[in-house]
Image 1 (cartoon, rainbow, N blue to C red):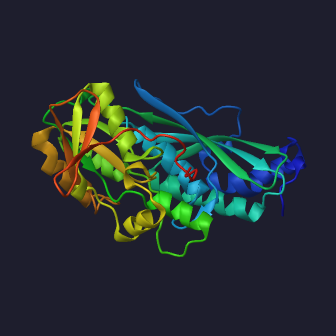
Image 2 (cartoon, helix red, strand yellow):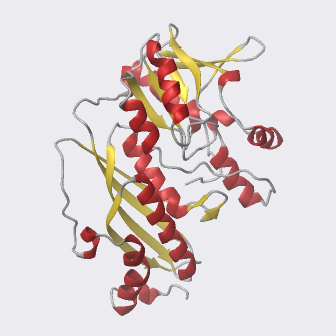
Image 3 (cartoon, rainbow, N blue to C red):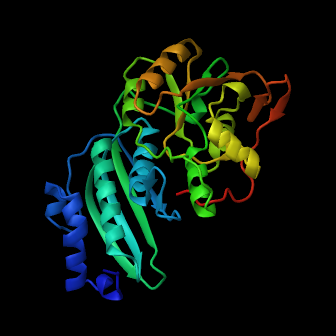
Length: 328
C-alpha cells in the first residue's frame, strides 16, 4: 500500500496507519494510552536532545533510517554522560511512500530501541505532497548521574585522545550505495550504551566525549581544542581506518578525518587513565578497533595538529563546504 494524503488527515486512515505500523512495533504501557503527551518518571538532572533524519537512501548496507534515528539520538544523550530512557518520533511521509518500507523501518527502530534500552513513548505523523520520501524527527530524554560532569572545556595538557573504532564506514557505505559502487563496506550505525557505561563506571577520569558524525573527527577535535583553549596532537598512523575504506578514499579523494560516522565516539581522558580507558572501549560491543590516537600538548590555543608517518606535521582544520553525501 502507498501513503496517500488521507493518511495525514487525522481520520480513519491515520488511525489505521498508527495502529497497523507504529503502535504494533512500538507498543509499551506509556504509548498505549495514546494521550497528547507522555507522563514518565523523572530525575533531578535530565539531558534532552532532538535530531532529524533525511538520509538517502533510507535503506543502506548495515542499517536504515529507522536504526539511524534511534542511534543518533541515543548517542547524543550518551555523550553528555546521560543514561538514555525515552524517545519520541515524528514521521514526515511524502505521498507515495510504501507502507511495506515503513513497516521495516518501524521494526528496525523498535529493535534498536530495545538494544539501546530506551522506550519510544510518543510520536506524530504528517503526510505531505512529494515523491515517496520518508523522514524522521526524534527527541530524546536521558538522566544524568549526580557524579557525572563532562565538558569539552575540561581538556588540558597531558590528557589523551581516544577513538572507539574505524573512521568513515557509514559515510563510505552511503556514498557507495548512491553511486552504485560495489564493495562490502557496512555502516557502523550503532548505539554506544555499553561502551559509555563501561567507561564511566570504570573510574577513568573522562574529560569529554563526542560522537563523530557530520564534520568528522577533524571538526570535533577542533571544537574541543577551541572550547578548552588547548592544542591537540594526533598520530596519523594510530587513527584506525579499514583497508577497504582507505582504498575507497584514495579513489574518490576523500579524507577519513572529515567523513561522517554513526557508531563512533572520541574521548578525552586524563593521561594516567589512557590505557585503562582503551581496555574499557576494546572490551565493549562495537569497540574492538579502539585506539589511542593523540594527546593534548602545549602549543597554539585552539589548534589540532597531525603528525604524519614521514615525520611532518600538518594543521587539521574544521570541515569546509558540504560534506556530501547527507549521511543522516
